Image 1 (tube, rainbow, N blue to C red):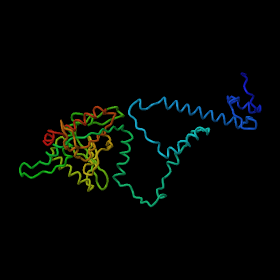
Image 2: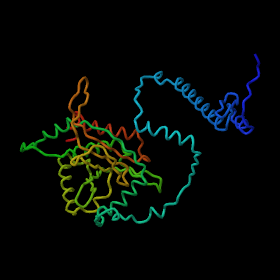
Image 3: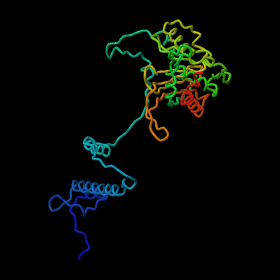
Image 4: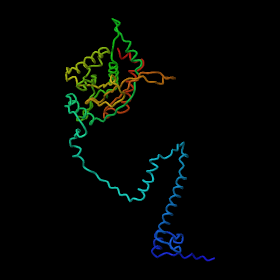
Length: 353
């Protein structure tokens, strides 16, 4: 038997093409007369070889990686749309010589141009209310300058609420109606005494922290004119009943626009309560130059695991925002725990005296 290969009929150009692609001309079946190999035969052979190699490679990869070796898996069919789009995307990525160019555009002027809302439909333009006009720059300054941290927690006020609803006048025996906010103010004052960093202000120019010895608690009041934050002066010297009366008084004065503007200054810390409206947690903005603010949400009955069983408990959402330049996270957590304990079981009655 002869070792010589059978002579293949092909032009020099076709042979050169086969060599360039590393194809064995003797393996290519000619489609022309007497088995002559053409350029198309070479190209078809190369294409078939690439496809075969790709299939083998994919098979090897799929065998190599068994996801079930690492834990439980769930195999789902490829969604129809992705099944249709997949080959198209793969073909585009493999056949199109992509070039991606990156650049930046200066859109300062475009952004700063006045936005014409009327292009999209009917609008009504109103002047900004006076209170919001005054508060706006103050809020913007506080938000941009103070590194806020907001901590969320819940206080169990089940016993506090039971106690609050049993309060009666010692002389007449009549039921006394006192808002839960009065108890919260007392709890905040108690915490401020134990954590003086919360009753402080930061003086960056002098690089000093000002610790306040007074306890003037700001109360955010929702009015038809906008949000107002008057202070309850010397809250540490007022009992629950006095605080309840003071809250009613300043609320009435704010809504009637009769509050003295000096009452908006000189606070220790602010309380913003959404309890009468609804909602749970939020991010209250610190009332500069104070360094902390407590947000109160609406209390809800929740199933809480107590000891060895679940019980219905009244849970109060707390959102404490503080200035991270003065107060760190650990102290913020301790302040929240202190509030929870003061408002919790066996502590409510102590806040009333």
